[in-house]
Every structure is written in structure tokens, then in C-alpha cells.
Amino acid sequence: MGGAAGLVLVGCGGGQEKKNGSQTPGTPGVVGEPKKGGTIHFMSATPILSLDPHTTEGVSVANYFYSYVVQPTDWHAPEYTIGDLAESWETPDDLNWIFHLRGDVKFQDLPPANGRLLVAEDVVKSIDRYRAIPGASSAWDQWTDRYEATDARTFTEITKKPYGYFLMDLGSPLTAIMAVEAVDQFGDLKNNVAGSGPYTLKSYSANEALEMLRNPTYYHDYPYVDGFNLKVYTDDSSAQAAFRAGQLAAYNATTKPKADNVSNVGGVSVRKFLDRTYTVFMMNAVKEPRFKDERVREAVDLALDRKQMIDKLCFGDGELAGPVPPLWPAALPAEEIEAAYKRDVTKAKQLLSAAGYSDLTFDLSFGSYADNPDRAAIIKSNLADAGITVNLQGADVGTWLSSLTSNDFVSTTFSHLRYLSDYIQINWPHSHGWAQTDIGYTGVDDSEVDAMIEKINGTINDQERIKLEQDVQRLVLKRHGPTLTLYEPYAYWAAYDYIKGYTPTSYGFGLYKYDYWIDKG
Image 1 (cartoon, rainbow, N blue to C red):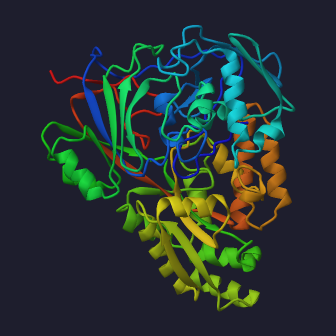
Image 2 (image 1 turned 90 degrees about the vertical axis):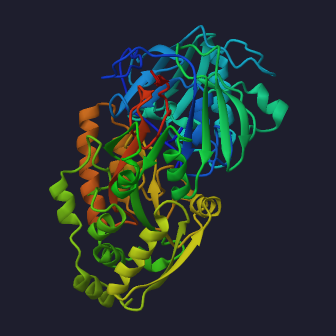
């Protein structure tokens, strides 16, 4: 299957409507009649590395340009899947999935597709293209028997065995449906677009800015705005200044003090929400064999002061996060997570001494963006209390992401962004990672955890799967890693009141929701 593969820069996955699904987006609670026109200027806190929707570098903006068979969505309800290209779908049994596609979807009116209708064969070719890209999720091979276009408007997939996250994978941002003939013309899609989504490309400058125009042939009434522009602000003070000056329509204030700094701007409202960004600390026993020893991992876990991280980095505005963070139905009760995360430096020292590693030293790498450097510094200080020496190694986001995806790190800390399903959180503790490949292998084998995760993946019934997810989390917490979840922050959205119909989330504007509009009265 498509995998939730965005790692730190993207969102993936979603829930499911199992039988005869057919859903239509809406905006609960929005009052007012949408108006057309205007351009929204928005910020991106991370570089826009590529436009290619089938790579992790480009997937963070793919949803603006491309359509999907189904879409996971967060703004309506967690773990809820809606039809996009699929008007409806049916599952005669737990292996067969039949999707009935819309007949009014056109690719953008530019060469080489030239506005032609999208057909089911485009779905097949797009999935084929994604699967051929190095690093693609092996889940397609694990679960898929075959898929085909049975006619121009019917896409069918048959799985080898029941797969509980089928719709999540099919709706992954990495399974964007494109006019594949564009790859033959351009060589790749790093700087070009060949989609049928809500926007078309106006201009793109790698790592700097992206300008988009409303797609006039899009198959919904929205987007209502004529244009949507993204500008990269790696420096938050610059983004804040641009917002105060009215150059940005909205500002994603990641902490309360940042939100307070702009709350006095005229015509601006601030809204608080629990972010879907959650943070982890990861140990790679392939690079540091001492991490294979559960006593060492437990010592590291006991030395971490998660509440200090919340206090210092989130100004107290955060929640402890278990392997599945608080927003998901499968999240463990807060009191259970708090009990599992009690800090005990004395016991940590005892464990290290018993293991014969009182002089433990290792490298900690991180991407030099957002609060990763500050979190790394706190981890270094926490572990020093237990006698563990940590060497910090910061790198630009591209270099660090490459080392993460190639398994070339000793330990690392980062934020998972934009997850619309708990698929990755559940599958990450697998001995071979969420993608279950050698690339995701961190040198710690746990056959019991692996068997539980594989059972979860094959469970179609939602309630049964949630119970199994909670059971495996309890076991993962006892095993102490190699991926230790830390916390999930609250965040704040500041937006000018003339922006209507948006929902404040960590995804900003977009990620499958485009029915916002401008109303300046």
C-alpha cells in the first residue's frame, strides 16, 4: 500500500468507511456565504524542496495540485475518509475493494495532458510510478495481490489478506494521481505539475516560495480564492513581522507567547488547538550496539524529563504523548502515560552500571529547524544527569532527513508532522519500522511486538483494532524504545478575520480542505 511515508514533513493516512463508502466534504459550524476572489498569502516553516508528489521532498505541497482516490481528513473528524476521485466504493468482502470514479475530472489544461479526462488507468499508472521510486513503502508488496482499471471509471484492488489500513494507504499524500505522460516530457516532476487538483502552478522557487492559481476546471466549486501563495520563513521573527504587517493572512504561532505577540494586531483572532505534531527520541542500535540492551534503553527513558520539555519548549502548553498521541481514539489514558513516564535518574544510573555502561557516550543528530535544537539540548542535559554524554550534531533539514531515511544516525530527535491516522505511530515500533524494510531497521528485534502489529494491520474492524493498538502500546512502553515518544504540544493560529471557513490545525490551509474564502466586507 501507499504507506504514510511523509516522516517529518508530511501528513498521511486516514481512517475508513468500510462498506459502500461515499462522503462529501463540508465545513461544520461555518456561517456565511462563500465569496470568490482574492489571493491568500501564507507561510511555510519548512523548505519546499520539490513538487514531485511521489517523493517525501514534494509530498508536503502535493495536495494543492493533485487528486486522490480517497482523502483522509482531520478538519471534519479524525480517522474519517472521504471520497475524492471516488464517488463511492464497495467491499464485497475483506479482500476486494471496488472504487467508482467521478466522470468530470480533468487534468490541468497544459501540455502534455492538455485538459484530458482522468481515467482509472491513470490511477494504475500513478501507483506503478510511486512504487518504482526508491524507498517506496514495501507495504504494497506485503498486502497487495493486484490492482487494475476494470473500465474507464472503475479502479479495483484485491489484497492478499485483510488490511485494516487499506483506505489510509490509498489516501496517502504519496499516492497522488497524475498524468504520467508528463514524466516522459519533463524527466521528473520536481519543478512541474501534472495534476487535477484545486490549484495550478504559477511559479516555484525551491526552498523559497510557491505561487498557485485556482484551477478553473477543478471538479468542485471551491477553491473560492483566485490564488494561494506560500513563502518559506525559516526565521519565525520574520514570519511574525510579515503577519503583523498584513503580508500574511495567517500565522501559525507554535507557542502561547508567540500568539500573545500578535494578539493585539487589529482585525486578528487567535485560536488554540492540540497540535498533531508530536516529538520522539530515537536510538539506532545498528550504529550503537549498546542500545540493543533493554537496560540501556530504559535508563535513557528514565533520564528524560518530558515535563521539563513541555514547560520550556511549550511554555507548559502540551500533553505527554504515548506511542499513539492524545488525539487518537487508540490513545492510552493520560494517567497511564504519566505513570509510564515518571523520571528516575537514580534507577537510570543503576541500570547503566548493571549493564556495564556507566561511561555511555553517543551522538545525537537533529534537523536545525523549529524547536529541534532546543529539544536536543534538553535531552543532552537530561541524560548528563544520569552520567550519559551526548554529542549534539545539527544539520540542515535536507541533510538530516537524508540521514534519517537512510538509517545513517546514532540517535536523533524530531517532530512527526501532519499525521491523519495512527498508522505510522502503531507501525513505527515494528523491528523494521513503519515501512517494515531494512531502511527502518534500528537493530532492536522484538518478535512479540512485531506479531501484535501485524495482527493490528490485518484487523478490519475499527473497535477491535483500537483495543489491539492499546495492548501493543503498553508492551512498547515496557520495552523502552528504540523510539521513545515525548510529548504533543498545543499550538495557536492567528488569522485575520477576513479569512472565512478555515479550521486551525497544524496543517495550515489546505491538506484536502480548500473551501475557505476572503470576505473583507
